Image 1 (cartoon, one colour):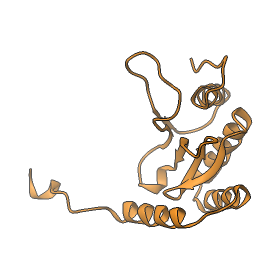
Image 2 (cartoon, one colour; image 1 turned 180 degrees about the vertical axis):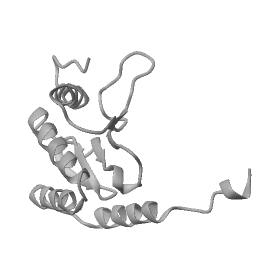
Image 3 (cartoon, one colour; image 1 turned 45 degrees about the horizontal axis):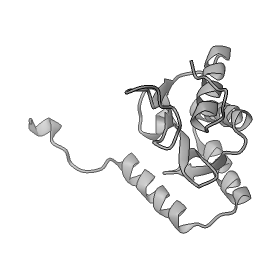
Length: 149
């Protein structure tokens, strides 16, 4: 490994995300407080991440209103009734990458054979993308009759 590629520890963005997570773990917020905190974090995002996060939030809440909005490492996250993280939105600016990510955690019910995607690059929301997110969220949240194809 060359000196230029040597790992030098966590980036400033990674350290900030870990600090956010530590604060989240210490807080015992009600559903209303968690939603308010999540929407405040979304409002802090720079554009175009803010607009994309707002659209994702609206789609997720319409597709699976029983999921509970929270923050997770300072990013929008949605938990099931058991408190398990199902779906999250990672803004592009959080880690200075070229696209945002819509991701699903292991408790999401997206299983499809021996291999399936659990994260999706997201640049903008078109009607087709909205339809796909809706189907994925419904399936991930265990709603029967859903198909993410």
